[in-house]
Length: 344
Ligand code: SF4
Ligand code: SF4
Image (cartoon, rainbow, N blue to C red; front, side, top):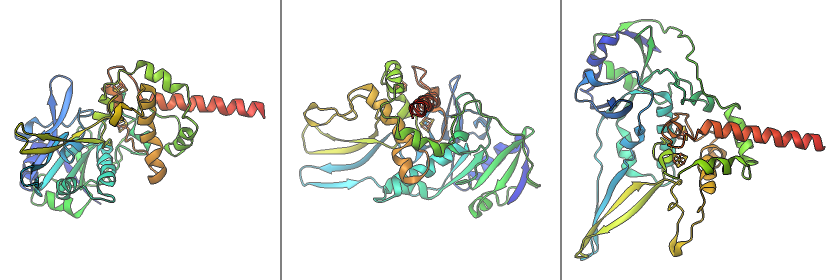
């Protein structure tokens, strides 16, 4: 793997250079305590040392609100909205965020390909960056190291306040072609960046825990604190549920179809015609959310569908922590197995 050294002060020049390839999207400060992936208009405004953005990178491939088509009720015709193929460079992306895009690829491109997602994804390039875990990150517990390179074209590893640039793909090589502030060097071993938050079991033991956790006491305790706001799903980078609505003009001659993100934590999510709701109670919705992350898809794909970004915990108004729920389930499971052994 090729490796170059890059001074921190030359990062804006690198971002400007990447702008030749296409639109550059990178983290920017939003208010006092928040960050957001935005299109770069001034490379000096890009933030490298951020913990997490409020909304995940997913919003660029699968927007929160998206018009799908216009239709006419007069002649029963319709025109779909075409998403153009545009080259884009996503800059300063953390490894768990990249892994969430790879999981979304699976969700959106397996079977019936979601063509708008595919068009946005095709000409996208990714430049990763290392980060220091805060009290909410736990991606290591779901098998994603800080230096995980899968999916990236280039990766910036911070070394003593400057950076080493790893070239991961041929596309990455072409991104830095002609940029003259890089110096060839050898990759350095960086001191381990420790995670403060951990799930106690290796992630491959979690499907077994969840196999017996359906009636655990933990669900009711968590549900008693949850206010059902849906923030945990709406900030999650791997959640992909959506709603589709048609809006018809007052003359009933035409209309448009729109897709919006939905959240399985909202009480209306599982409401069906006739007023029935098959996940009416918070306890059912809480359990369902966690089973979607650690059991249902994991049984099929062999990977947790949680990437440990910590958003659902950091932005939960009730302070509900996903790793704490999982650790409580593990504890309850251990207790149950201990009782079984005593009885045998
Ligand atoms: S963010 Fe917290 S309070 Fe809101 S639905 Fe999720 S778990 Fe419940
Ligand atoms: S479940 Fe929570 S920690 Fe896991 S990927 Fe979603 S928002 Fe991040």
